Length: 212
Length: 217
Image (cartoon, rainbow over all chains, first blue to last red; front, side, top):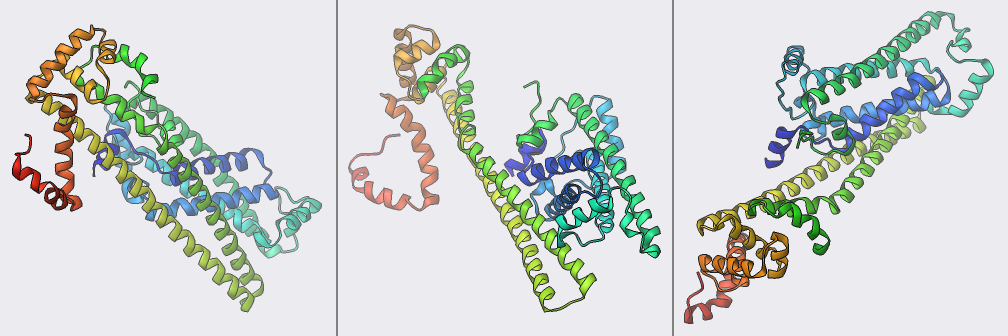
């Protein structure tokens, strides 16, 4: 109980699963969104890693410690608005988990990541694990990069594939925008509340007021 | 170890009251073992991720195979392997959760215990009506500093410290540093022993003695 009270007073102490999945997902989104070529082997591996990270984090949302569970940060638009208003007015309340605005962002990020990964998996015609190296060399030979040229023979599925690819790209771009907003939100929250939220996510230390 | 801390402690703790003396003992345990513990936890988390990745990989493989080839014995076996992996991930996660809970409870218990002990000391000092300077000296004495060291820490003459310590002993009704310390350790052990079920053995062992001479207050 004392531990719970302590975290409530000074912000959450993030456990290693939350921290590892957070930073690895951030890395995966950055790498796949900005660096790797869509459809390349690296893109697929990074994408599947992101899926595994999402699965692990969602599992952790059910079986993890108190502050990592979905039940400690239910999505609430009204709560988020109230939180932002409080913050703007200079009032700050500590939350045992994500703050209400942050948790809305968390759910938005997960939903968008889920959509991106699901469409990405669908776009991969070869079931991924069979032989990524062979698949990628085939892709390179056929010049399959952004456009799925090797799917031309399957005309009936062509439209679906194009639609899914469209959704994949839209979701990926939305994901990058949300990630940027998330970073901005963390910066604003950290500045206004005087607590270093980034440090809490890096080393899992409780976020004491920086004035201490 | 203590020697290294003293020079800068001397300047910062000089004018502080006994309560401020808690700081070093609170920060000391945060340095070594927990850091190793934390790194271990991060490595465990990374391993759990690797396990999850493999599970996703195998389940994807099985689903793909079933779609392409339908179910046969080979694929059914692969599905069983993937399922076992998935169950393994859940149980590893539960185990990790338990480890995290346990280490947090232990940390909380230690901080509660050290906080309670410090509260006990300052409450006792108040009940003896120690002045702030005497509390300071008494706390340093409890922490094991000798008179010359306390004098250096407080920037006063050894004679002053000796006199202050003598007043502390007088107010506490003890005659030595050991007895002063015993006032607190006695309280600490008296609370701990019944829980450990050791009191009966202690009292029976000292029973003969306490019959002939009454125990000290």
